[in-house]
Structure formats: C-alpha cells, structure tokens
Image 1: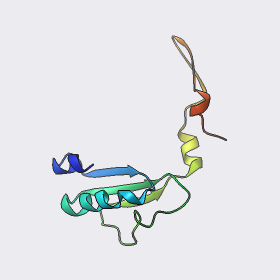
Image 2: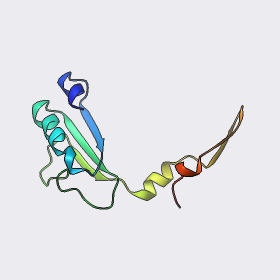
Image 3: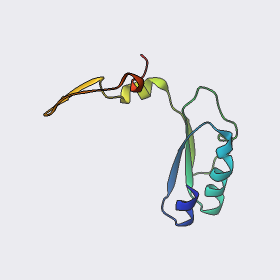
Image 4: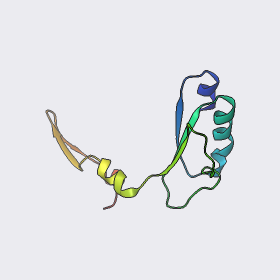
Length: 95
C-alpha cells in the first residue's frame, strides 16, 4: 500500500484486517498521499486503532458480515466442459 502510494497508483486502498498494527501505514497513506483507505474488518470485534470516529471523507470502515460472505461463495460443486470442480473441505465456509 505504501509503495503504490508513493507512486500514486491508486485513489482508494482497501485493507482487510482488524490488526491495530496496520494503523501507521493507513495513517501515512491518508495523510501523505491524500489517498482514501477503506478498512474491511473480517472479525466480530472492532479495532479502535483502525476505526477512528473521524474518518477522512474519502475513507470508510465496514465490518464484513459472515452472511454476506456466505452469499458470495460459489457452490461446493460446479460442472464445466471438463467435468466436476469441487471446493476443498478446508475452503468451504461453515453454514
């Protein structure tokens, strides 16, 4: 994110994390590059380091809801011209 920010390669970066260690690079991107940084939190707990109350206008904070993630998943089995494609057991989300 920082390397691409130095090169002005994006208008909005998306960080999928709840790790407070990401706070400094997110702040640098927002302040130094004037870039928007959206935080998508994949956990049920909120990271206060990544979700300040006063977000810049071009940034956002959102929690990834498990039901939305499940709705975006492909079926466990797909068929194409070459045959059956099956999701590995470790890749399937619990119902």
